[in-house]
Image 1 (cartoon, rainbow, N blue to C red):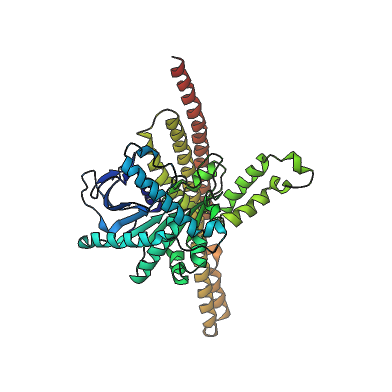
Image 2 (image 1 turned 120 degrees about the vertical axis):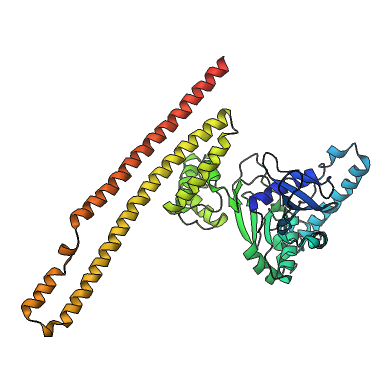
Length: 466
């Protein structure tokens, strides 16, 4: 078993907070019933921690089969100001920050001027892996997950693929905004064999702008693993591992779709709808419009091409059965969220619950109707084949029978006598009627959702006035 990408993202968000904790400390993911115990940690030039999932704040039932190593990105000047009162630690971190930045500088080849290299931080990460492995050995533990942010990304990719190949097993890699990844591969720091391993076992999350990583001389390009790219808005920190909105082992496509933002994993239908919105809302720069520049940005196809280039191929359209399964899971999540929500959030959740239920009801009716049609078609085809086989058998016996006897046999072997067209029509009409009824119910549910929003907003206004 391995932790999923969303869980690894949550751990990335805890590194800086928990570096001061001692080994054996149990911490909780904020606002969730998830607990982890620190197996090993390092707070020097490289900042990292190794953790195992536990059942509760007491640290019961540690799962050493899901030991995860998460490594923070390059330390930046100023992030130690909060520790100014602790002068020895403050000045130590000043030195660590300089060393960390220096390693990023070398890895990028002076930000693209020179060939660059695999980040020197890789040695620290390799040693961290070995120490962690030794600490969990007595528990029959294995390192199942590794994650690196920014400069740590290529170092984690190198270490995970090195030991994954050596031990002939999968180590799941979840990286965020890898810095100088192409330099690491181009200079041989990460071998072709390691790249092939990472292509099967690594997922890299990248922001659309390439914040910070554009300085690595290759615009943050990552030549290994599966890239998951997400669109960021003005004011968002694209380089933070907390920024991508994730669900399981991928981006939360529904979140981005509802906000008309691109993300890897969208269907063609979703992409084209967002492209139409972007083209419609694009504000032409009048100063250059007269020269014909940027005019293609008012056409949806421009954005479709951009998606395919930057975010990858279209995802296959989900089947109705897939959508029903997704909706059922979402309905459970909404019920759980409603129990702890209030205000505007509760209004939004109630609306989504009703609309999701409406869509599910209609999808189930459509699937039911199609299943009836498919079963009738299959049964009808089976009868036709059976009749054909019997007619063929009758002809083989024809030389032993009179002409009248052959005609008598064949007259009974026809669809008109073996198949009841009236019952077929009645069954299909009944299935269609059910589908039509459920469509009407779904429509009424959507109208109810509209009213929920309206009534809840009116209620909120009344309470505000009172």
